[in-house]
Image (tube, rainbow, N blue to C red; front, side, top):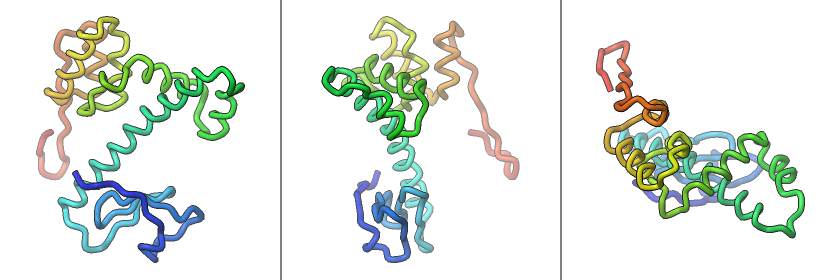
Length: 173
């Protein structure tokens, strides 16, 4: 995976928005607050690295949001933290409380980077930590979707494999 770095738009003059801040996902892709700026000479490998890096950022943002809210919640001297958070994030109360709840359920050392935050949310009802970690490892090893984790947690011993078929070539993945 390539390094992700914070940049000022001046480094890529064709990128302009009010913040002037971008994240470099690859040497050919900048992530701005309003979307991606993609170089014309991007390779398929860089394109795929950009997708992986973008997904990694999206996944870690829910963890970070939850961790920040849990920290704020622990600070009794900060007052109406949730009202302020709602205004700052423009997310619903439900999303914010869910993010904090999942972060509290999984200390950083118990989070599995090979599956998404949503996989962790689906496994959260499993009370036994070892069993929960086992399910997340199995999900990572077998490529389960979050829906498959949900099915497993609800009682299906082996979730049905989700198959996607390309309408043009018939390739399945």
